[in-house]
Each structure stands twice: as C-alpha cells, then as structure tokens.
Length: 80
View 1 (cartoon, rainbow, N blue to C red):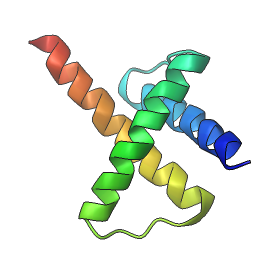
View 2 (cartoon, helix red, strand yellow; view 1 turned 180 degrees about the horizontal axis):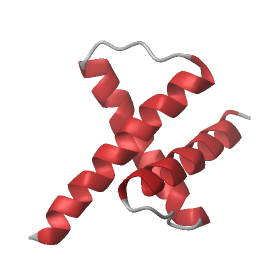
View 3 (cartoon, rainbow, N blue to C red; view 1 turned 90 degrees about the vertical axis):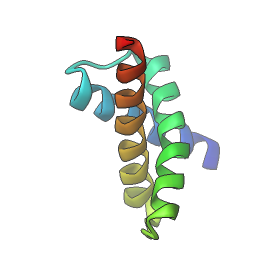
View 4 (cartoon, rainbow, N blue to C red; view 1 turned 180 degrees about the vertical axis):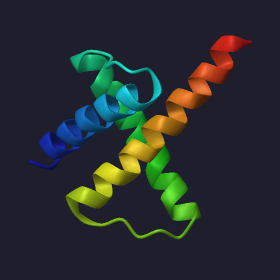
C-alpha cells in the first residue's frame, strides 16, 4: 500500500511541478518519474532546512518543492 501512495504522490507532484514550470504536464509516466525524483530531492531539502513535513500533505508538499527544483535544474542544464 505504501508503494501505491508513493506512486500517486509522485504522479501528483510531477503534474503540479510540470504545470508550475512548463505550463503542461509530462504524461503519466513522466509525471511519476519527475515526482519520485522530486520526492527524494524535496525530502533532502526539507531535512537540510529542518522542516518537518508529515502525513500525505507534507509528503506532497516536499515532493512538489523537489519536483520544481528538479525541473529548474534541468532547465538550467538544458540551456547550456
């Protein structure tokens, strides 16, 4: 059951991150990949800033922050 939540939160975070940065989503699998990478990155960022994000809303918030940061980094690397 935790894996299903992880995938659903990843998909939602990827979709939200795509909408915020690009104005469109990346498709189902793309959203999941961006969201999972975002969840790992967001968890690390929240740990470094000593922000406690618990529950589903906290997991989604950290994943969205991570997804946005991930997409911004990809955009910077793509420009060069």
